[in-house]
Length: 431
Ligand code: HOZ
Image 1 (cartoon, helix red, strand yellow):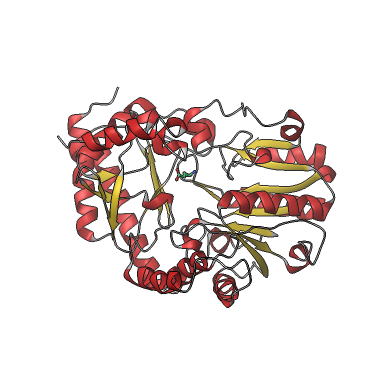
Image 2: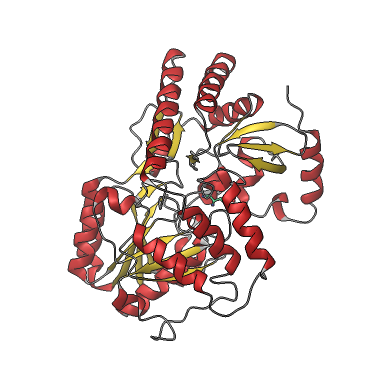
C-alpha cells in the first residue's frame, strides 16, 4: 500500500487556511474520499507527491500540459522570460506573437483579447455578446461548465456537478440567473422550442462543442449545426467554449471537426502551456466593440502577461499534426484497453474519447447528456479512483471531469495503465 501520510498532514494544515484545504474544489478529492495528494514535482507524463510516490498523470493540470510536465523548451523559454521581468502593464510583442499563432491554428479568431483564465474569457465573451446584440438573455446547456462567473453558474458541470445540486447556485442573484436559459445538451427539439419562444431576446448561445465538464460527451453534428442555424436566423451570437477542447479535441479545435465557424470562441488551458491564460476572440466587427475601440469594457492588470504569453508561445510552437497523430493513437490504445478490461470483468462501462480527451462512466450508456451521466455508479467510481492511485495512476477525481493525454505519455505508460485498470477490476467488485 502506498503511504499518503505527508499529504494527509499537509491537507490538515491547508484546511485551516483555505476552505476545503484547496483553491479549487474538485482538487479536494472530497467526493472520492477526501485526501488530496500534495504534489512536489512533475516530469513528462509523471507526477510525484510529497510522500515520494510516483504516478502516471492523466489530469495534466486539468488539461493545459499537452507537452507533459516541465517540458524542456517551455522551461528554458520561461527562465529566459523571467530574467527580463515578470510584468510590465504595457504592451509587448509577445502578445501579438501569440495572437498570430492562435489565429494560424484557429482562424475564426480574427481578433482576440488575452485574459488570465478561462472564467475571465467566457465572462468577457458573454458581456461582449450582450453589448453587441443589445439583448440580455443567454443560453447554456445543462452540465456544460464555463467557469464560475454569475451568469454561467446556472445548471453547471465540473465542481458544481461534483458537489452541489446543479439547479442551485447560492450567491448568484436571481435576477441574473433569470436571464440564463438552459436546455439539455444535445437536445435539438429543446433548443428549437426555446428559440421559437425567445429568439429575439437571446444575445448568445454558449456551448462546449465537446463537453468536458461532465466527463467527455461530444456534441452531435446535428445539434451543433442547429445551434449555428438558429443563432444566425435570430441575430444571436454563437460562442464555442473551447477552453478545454481547444488544441485538445483536435489541433485546430472542435470547430475544425464539425466545420462550424462560431461568432466568438473562448480558449484557455493549453493556450497558456501551464501558465494562467485565457483568450476570447472571433469576428472582427464584434471584437471591435471592446474598449477602447468600442463601448464594451474589458481590462486586466495581468492580461497578456509576458510569462503567460511565453508559456503559450513555447507550447503552441511545438504542436503539429504528427504530434497529434501520436497522442490520438495513444488515447485510442488506452481507451480500447480500458473497454476490454471492463468487458473481461463484466463491468458496465461507457468510454468516450475525442482527440486527446478521454473519460469513462460506470454506466452501460448511451451517455449523451447530464441526465445520462447521473445514471453512473459514482460510488464505484470513487472506489475505483482510489484503486488506481494505489496502482500509480493519477486520474481526475470526479465522474464529472475529463482525463487527458500528453505528448510525453509512452507506450509503456499506456500498457502500465491498462494493467492497472485490470488489477483494480480484479480487486474491486461492482455493485
Ligand atoms: N474546473 C476545473 C476542471 N474542469 C478544475 C480546475 C482545478 O481544480 O484546478
